[in-house]
Structures are given as C-alpha cells and as structure tokens.
Length: 481
Ligand code: ADP
Ligand code: MG
Image (cartoon, rainbow, N blue to C red):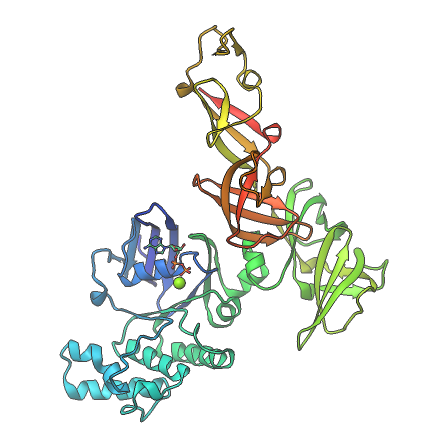
C-alpha cells in the first residue's frame, strides 16, 4: 500500500540499456514530502539514470514509480510536478535573465503580469533581485547556477531534482551555494532529490542519503547512520576516511584484527569472520607498549586542523588523525576505545561461476581448459579407452546434461597486466577497490558479464584492464545433473 506521507516511491526499479548493461538494479526508495534526499556514489553508479527516470526523461525496464501513490510511468516529463537542475546550467545565452526564467511560463501561455510577479519572486529567492535585464554572459558561474535554479523553481514544482548542480563551481562558491540551497529547501518546503559524488556535500545537506554503487543501493540512512553505522565495507570506505580490516570475533565483545586484540561494543558471536572499521580520529597515539597495537610512523601530513599520520604495524597500514604531530620513524602505540570500533559481519566474497564440460570431456572455463581431474569431481565416474567420461552406470556422460560450478576465494585469484599470459582465463576491468589495511579488495567486471572479487596486495587503478589467473587446484567444484 502506498504511504500517504511519501510523495514518491520507487519500487523495484531497474534500467537495462539496449546494449545489455544494467545501470540500475532493483532500486527501492521512499521519499517523504519535504525531505532532502541525496543519491551519493562514484561516477557511473547510476545516479543520473535514476534521476532521469523520476523526471520522465527515461523509462525503467522494470518496476514502478509512484507519485502520491499513483503510477506515473506513462506520464511525460512536462506533466510531472517535477523540475530538474543540471550540472551544466544550459541557459539560453542570447536571452537576458528575465527571459531565461520566464521561458517555460511563456510557453504555457501564463498571463504576462503573473509571469512578472513569479520571476521577481524567484529572483529574490536566489538572491539576484534586480538582475532581470542582465545578459547571461555577464554572470559568474555561481550566479548562472542560481538562474538555473530560479528557472526550475518558477514552475513551482513539488519535487526539485538537482543533478550535481554545484559540480562546475570552485570550492568556495560550492560551500556558499550548499548553505543557500539548504536554506532554500527549508524555506520552500518542497522535496529535493539531490545527486552528488561528494560525500561531504551529502553529509552536510541531506535528511536522508542513498549510497549507491554499480547500480545498486548499498545503504539508505541519515548522515549519522551512514557515517557511524556503515552496513558494508563499500559504504565505510566511501564515507569519510576509514581503516578497514578483516578479522574474527575471539570472545564476547572481543575481536582480533590488524594484529591486535580489541574490546568492542558490537555483540557478534565468537568465531564469526568480521570486517572492522575504525575511523582515523578514533585512534589515539600512545607510548609503544600501551594501547592494543604498535608500529612505526611512515608519514605525517599536516591537514590544517589535524595531522594525518600513517603507521606501519606489521603488515598493516593504519591511518590516524591527531591534533598532535609525530615524527617519521617514531615507534608508537595505538589505542582504540571499544566504541571507536564498528564491527560488521564479513560478507562472503567467494566467487562462484559456471564451468563447462566440453565435447572432449574436459573441463573448461571461457573456452580454456582447466587442469583438473573430472573423474574426481563427478562422483563414481571413470574414463573409457576413448577418454570419454562414463557415469556410475557405465553410460557416457552427455556434457549438455551436466552443470558444474566452481568456487574460488578472492585471495586465490591473481591479476596480471600480461593479458597474453597463457594462464589468464578471463580478462576484466577494475570497477571498484577498497583498502583493507594489508591488501586491496577489487571488483573485476569481466567480459563474460560475471564479476569477480579479487584480493591483491598491490595497488591497481580503477579502469585498469587485467588478466585473471584462476588456479584450478584452488577451485572447489559442485555438480548438478
Ligand atoms: P552517474 O550519474 O552515477 O555517474 P549514470 O547514471 O550517468 O551514472 O550512468 C550509469 C552507467 O550507465 C554508466 O556506466 C554509463 O556509462 C551507463 N549508461 C548511461 N547511459 C547509457 C546508455 N544510453 N546506454 C548504455 N549505457 C549507458
Ligand atoms: Mg551523473
């Protein structure tokens, strides 16, 4: 049932493009009337695509969009009470400010006097009183963006969509406009859906943040929720600075990670594999031997209000923010209070993928042979003198009638930039990376459409093209007939 508090609801929205690429997958969101909601995520994660579907410029391939509980899928953009402000303001350069703002109303044949009043009102709202006659080219970037906002507001939309509206402005202007936009939102009481890839912008402006990655929602919550209680390693890494470690629960409210034992406040069962998040500001530098772990300072950077200090502790790197400096080469202890540790149950990152039995009754993946014994994988099977595989009844196995899947752990896959290496089974592009203290966790989009998660101690870049080496002796197989 539609909830009457919600102005807009997205239900199981997906958008798959004609080339088969899924830009948005199973997106579910409720937006309350008057709320300031922000879509936050890296470039290419599907923010604009989602906004375009809300505005009516694009259609979902699956799912419904409800406005006040009613399906608006069939409604063209100009019949939706929604206006959009884009990053590129797209003002008409040959028109003055008044005509730019009045353009839409004139097309709707709004009476002249009414247009005049409305334009005056929105110009006041964006702090450009008296600018009616000025030409667009005399305005600064910030002023042009205000005109673009005025042009959207003059239609008195119920929902204003803003797609990285401050992206083209310099830092100082952006900060000013953030404050003004927030004030405008509070004054107008209309619903804002705001898009940004800037986490600080999202945290300071929003009532609710939707964190997105690769077309999927990772977490929905208030800025405080998202910062203090990230639901997974992606969110923890993307929001603010974090130290992220793999670890294990060693007792009641006790965890081991980064080579140390820590008391924590999250009640997770002993023996559970975990991901621990520690914010740099929650680590205190103490004397070596005090605190839970120790190490040697490898870098110190002054950041204006604090120092960012990196410490090598065994094979882990730990980043600390402190108002007190330290010297490179110093031996230090590091102390974290229990409430400075956020424990998440580790996601299962085992890669599972289908492999094929080919016509010569050998196992292959992506057309390349896997050096492993099929008779050991298929229980009761044996080969005849022709090399064919027979089942327990002595019948030749039909490759079409058997389904085999392989499982491999992220740390057992190797990446190489030598794509022609004969050990490479599949090629892919790095689409995501998270630093886990002593290694990086990568997401590889392969040409097969199957993504792989790979752990590697070396730093690769987003967008790097690599070959994946998947050793067959590290795979576990399961068979379905
Ligand atoms: P964002 O706004 O978060 O940066 P977009 O929503 O613009 O991301 O794009 C999401 C993904 O969809 C990108 O990988 C982009 O290349 C892809 N994409 C966008 N439009 C099309 C299209 N018309 N056909 C195919 N892929 C598209
Ligand atoms: Mg975009």
